[in-house]
Image 1 (cartoon, rainbow, N blue to C red):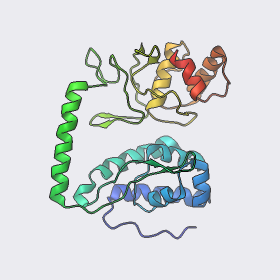
Image 2: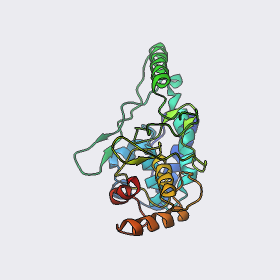
Image 3: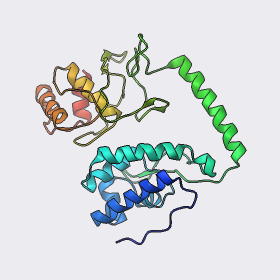
Length: 265
């Protein structure tokens, strides 16, 4: 059993509860930080920050930990959502997350640069207000998730980000039945409006926007799987294998570059 450091006193209770849960999973797995880093592609120093409340792990790291510890990723992701929302209100405690993830020199190693930094409260408020105004102005002009009939999740142009939109109500919700509107973009490829990735690896237990995208594309290609709910379960895996057989690529039930190539055509 690990002897954990005391968590920061200013840590939000929701974040504290989430970090304690991550610590329990790590202890139960019996894995050291070095082994955890090898099995998740997130560096040892990153996990040290995540497990000591110095940085909020990205959702991909949470999903990777769930797989390694053989636990329910949907439940853990839901806990992460609560912690992420609490982390976003950190200025009230004098804490702010630092810059986003950066790559280390080694392959597939991710170092999350989040660091709690003390800042003047008034400066935080002014900065946050300015940022909010800028975001609202951009959204009013672009509105990438809004279709021509005003529904969320579609639109003439697919969502251009590679990760989760975190703006107001447009937060990824595992299990929600998302609407699919697949269109061919200027590059000649098909998009459903939830992710533009053509390389991201997703598989059983993955839960994120790229899963919704893949499910919509599978449905477009007449590979029935039920609702596009963003949860990569057995039905999605079977549909992927059928699409792989039809597209003459390796049949493994996982979606990587080759399978994205089949789905985007």
